[in-house]
Image 1 (spheres, helix red, strand yellow):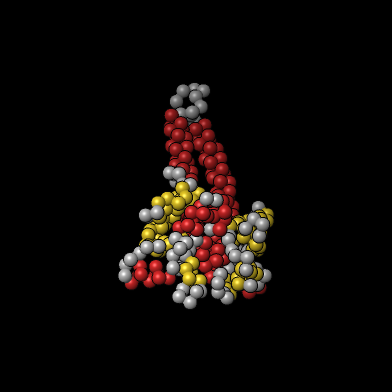
Image 2: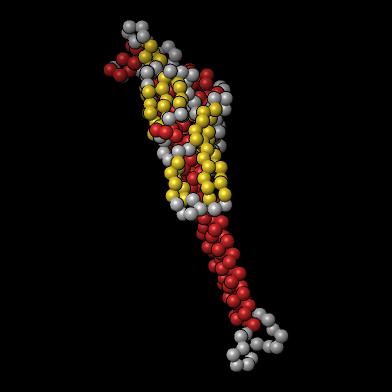
Length: 145
Length: 167
């Protein structure tokens, strides 16, 4: 080995180190993307489950003239420019499947991602569900028709 | 180090240690994700079970008895054993009424025994025990009155309802 000569070991180590750091960056980006999607999915699942529980529980009030305004939480997510957004999810009731289906679209650095969730509900035929006020007023109306 | 040798022992050791460290980090991350997932499943199951037991004992299979004026009265947190046995003969319909059609269900009463048994021993089970009044279809207001005031419980008695669900 001569003076000022870089050893092959060092060169190889540097190359491997650079490769590992690059792959770590890729992995971290991937984790962050997945984590953001999972966080929104979890929020949707929570809203679906809580809303379905309230609607199903109204069966025990079937002999009363109940009227419920159920507040719906907003979905929070961070977009591609690291800005935080709060949006209401879309909620629809599918009578044939006895399901409450929730969906939302978030924009990430990987493009728009459509996230869905659902929860089973059980209700009496007299129970009326109105999801229209959610987008404007932030609540859903459940009442005995 | 010899002429023509590419990898030294130092480099090989360093690579082995780096690979081990990477493996440990990825395993820890996956372990954490698994724990979070299990916690979420348990939380969701608990919420579904609580809702199911509330509507089972307050709407789907509760006791309806006639009061002294001939009006029908619903007993909160009660089970009509005849009604529940009939419903349990068709588990799919019962689970749809409880909004848990995606889960397995087990229903037991402390003295009347097992009404429905779908749960097998496995992970992801949530169970709730609840003190309820059980009655049969011929229970009357006088039976309820006698049970509450005199302790003579004929068609109505106090039991523990165990409801378990499994994902």
